[in-house]
Image (cartoon, rainbow over all chains, first blue to last red; front, side):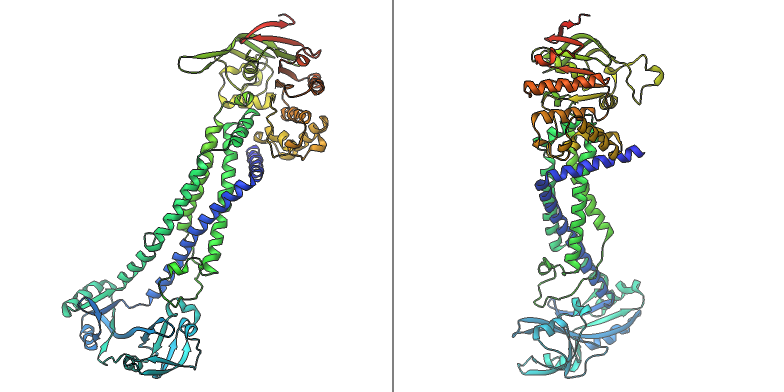
Length: 378
Length: 242
């Protein structure tokens, strides 16, 4: 046992000195490997964090949203629909919601306007997201002018700015009183943008949705589970930009490992011959090459993962936030809460470190099976 | 003692062609003696060294090793010796590592690492503690006047120094026998003489020495106990005569 440990230590020592001897080659391998792991790990961390934010956001979403449709497009829904829907057995609450978008031609940005049903700002005042505050360069108690439907200005006072930690969802948000919302868009008082429906028993959601469609064939109920599915397919491995970036990163790794596996240099082959001739077994040579591969792949994996962690959670994924955070003009400025999916990191480890180490060992194994007397003839 | 009994080594070049490098050779090498294999290139000297040194197996014949201690050979059987020609690769490696020290024609030192590390290399897979091996390597460097080159990469050393590093490396596992293949091929006369002096001292310390060479400085050396002349894979002359 003691001898076995010493043998490992001796061979590991020699592996380290071998790596240092081929400094330029091994540093370049390390850098390429680290870069690939960095890109893949950044994607994993970023998507995981976004999924977590989305899950938190949807946790507070209503069980079901009912929209009215005209010619296949979303239309305003009469509030009296809500009265009839709340009469359906199983429905515990129906809340009409007022929300919409406002395009600010001066700053060329879209804001999301919402009239909250609980604790709305008093008429004539608004609460804004920090993205809006940054864009308009305004603070609490400043006056803001929005253009109403007729072009006439609507003067509003900023009564508060939403906290930074909610910025992912509130960056472009403007909360206002229902009266101001209706005045701004000339919206009748008896309509709403959509209806939020709460159902006491989640198992009855589908039944209630069917009843709503039966009662109002011009409506479209959207379940929370459908929203979750949409987010999942958007941010999952198979979704959107992820699949493209992952494919590119994995493809680079395959080329990299293939290049490594394609053979040893003449110098490395000669060294293996010398080691065999001075009494090293094939197994000793393989152990040496295993340590060489393992040292590079493990350190590169750790470095790549740590850099990705810093990149995603400390610099808010600066390198690909523009590609992945959406198409908005008001990019949220926020720090993602660190979330690490152990399973996905393990998959990354197994798919990178193991193939790389194998790619290092296979050509060495081919070289190490030469007869030890070959060195005497070289 | 090493005893070769009708040893033949044939290499297959293609399915229909083969080449016999060593042809029906019988030879006895006593412990603590110096045996020189002489003969022109292609006479089978190097192949015979490889066969004796357990680097390759004979196609036929037996190679008996007597007085060799291994993990698989029972102490009670030691007086009989054993036939190394039929052993699996794993056991051959063990014998090669513990019984023989090799000195190659091209020295076969690894560039980029120090002379000291080159000397220690054969001991790494044995699992011996590094400080112990290092101490032995330093002693060998002192013995061969190499101490000042302890940490120098081997590419900085002269031909004679490289030769001495190769000898020190061959001795690191304290082998019973030293096998040297054309050790003076890259040395001038003076360095060749110095090599024979060094190797003579090893013989005096009880090592069995086996050298293949066509250098007169080697095969005419007064240190040699036995000179075996080879040609076309066969022994054509042996001094003293058997």
